[in-house]
Length: 82
Image: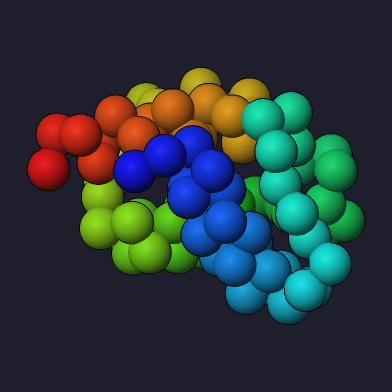
């Protein structure tokens, strides 16, 4: 899976979770950039990402996520492992 393919799918996930079709994420996107991205929605987002990509993100990885680029790295790493 290419980084571009991951971002295309992530845009859909973010748009669905936050109910906002104008959201487009990139490497530097953080919770600060999306109005409704709070701790509750973060949990929903992680669950939606795991479901969309058929992966599991470990809790210690979730705690360390600083931006969407780091999330993409995990997604790509897990996709290779499968």
